[in-house]
Image (cartoon, rainbow, N blue to C red; front, side):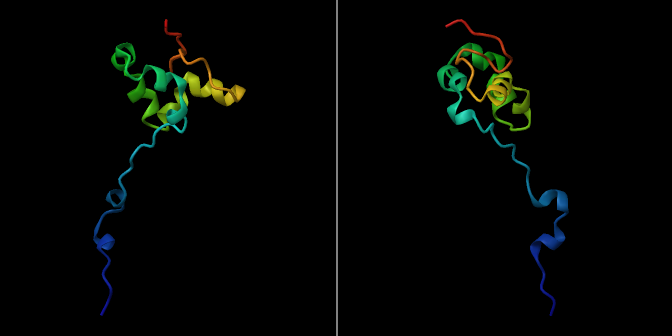
Length: 86
């Protein structure tokens, strides 16, 4: 008797759902932590555009500055590189 694995009948593209991972800096991002309740941040959709998908987060200017300098950028620097007025 041959063993039948449920995955044998599932097409490979359906075996694992690809769930985008969040940016690895999200939990310690000063911008996110200080501005997540800010309506300007929500309106611009910055969190959805840059933070909730690790691949998209590579376009984040904050992340780029952190990778180049080894230091987090100013908390009011947005993911697009614009400085928000505080």
